[in-house]
Length: 248
Image 1 (cartoon, rainbow, N blue to C red):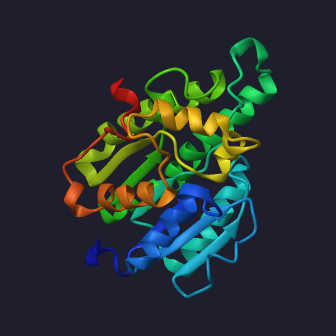
Image 2 (image 1 turned 90 degrees about the vertical axis):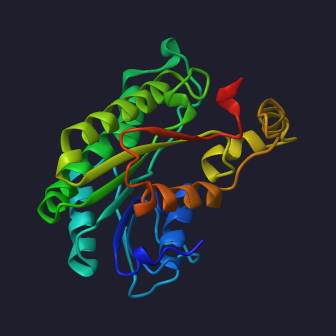
């Protein structure tokens, strides 16, 4: 799938070092876009250096570091017209009584508040150019229980609400915001499911109507469509990519 509209555009991706974020960076670069990639991990060898990439190391839970990283990327590649708020972490499926306040705040800081910080940093620039697209990473855990523990499920539900309000508030000014809701995606974040004899990973596949896990590239491909002009009338919605999990 080639989308010439991406040539020369600047895209910002958080959580860029691995998993879905990594696949999104690669997908947009293949389309000819420039990418500001942000992650707390060092730049992986798989993300080759180039004039189309500004890789910034920052923890998305550190507001100052995150804003500095965004500004540094913009100084090199210009203001982004597309933002993929992809950084996130799981909570070990812990119920509320096994979730400390510290853990609760850490999950929300990574999964939810980072999206707020990124959005408020970039949105004024998008409004000035009367165009901007946000693809925020939710989860099936943002639509049903069981995809995570108390903190993760709360954060992902909140992302969906935040995205809808973001779109409602600014759609008339050229802004478009939507969520992706992945199900079982084979990423490092889910490595524990494949540990040992891999029985958990097999159970998840068996419980998924499609009978398999998806690859990060499949989510990246959906991102390309959702951020494109082909989806220009898609506003404030959640697009599942879950192998049929939610249909059960």
